Length: 106
Image (tube, rainbow, N blue to C red):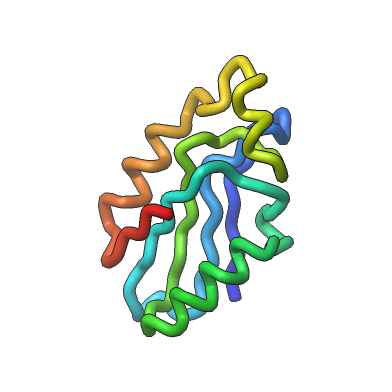
């Protein structure tokens, strides 16, 4: 499986995360609330669930973007962050969905 993620230079914002196991099958985009600890090499429980759903629907690629790009295991802390969305977040959301075969907002 190929694993990708774009995390800003501070490590505080993750804009996109992808997992690819078959490029010939379609792409599912998950739009979630905010990223946790997953990165280009490590899956967290949410990413593992998204992979499972994507495989069960017979797709071969998933991309995860978030309404808020600030990385935290506790979404409540988003209220205390000056910029929880992140400077580049909207760009990555739009880029992810433009070639999606299925979009899930959760």
